[in-house]
Image 1: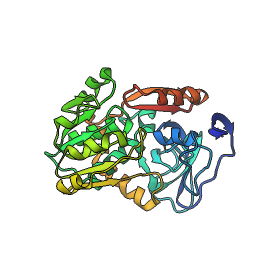
Image 2: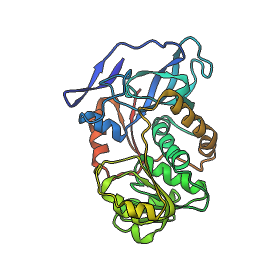
Image 3: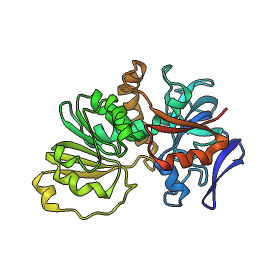
Image 4: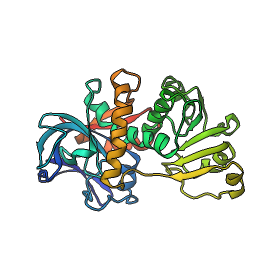
Length: 314
């Protein structure tokens, strides 16, 4: 099989043996695989794959057809359309996935949209509802709202009845984020005065944190799931105490299979029906064939996009 390989800090397209499924596993013929910030960090040597995952083949999400099944598989059959979260190895023509890490692809999604759905929507749903406990009528602030996770979070928050404020760096993208469900879309330096917020979803990192704490409502919650702009800041504990606030961080990639499966079942129940009715969509900024993987990563790193960059496989 052909796959993306990270070698000496560079991206290559290489040939590797096609794996065989073990107990509970599916062999998926990949049709599309979304790019994520973790892939860029892995390329730069800052985010190694978890134990047991391919060390040099990136990719955290994919969509395709089941090509073969291992012993004990119950949920899916050969030929089924599936989308999945993996710890690595998703950017390849074939990938092994445990059946519990898969979801069915709704008919409403094409391959690029399906390939860009699992990681960002499961991450956003878990952060908003499992970690932060977002409730209808609460005020939600989403930083970095034009990206994959951010655009998912805006939609999920709005559909759940929250009042969504979004920050977007590039002015030309703000109207598109508003159309996803944000009531207010602001420049990154203008959010503090528009509070208070019950929940803050932090996708940018340290530069926002002092203002995040100041802008919290009493009992507010901050969930940090992205630190691309920096990971360290000075925290005023008195401000946190005064707001009776909660600050927590979360990642998805290294969680045990059982925890990922629970998060995905929640998305199946609560989000896939919204995909079917068109209430939630996967914005695609650009697609690239496997042979142009370097261009795809460059486009992702350049920013200034709405939604996902997706690799496609013929």
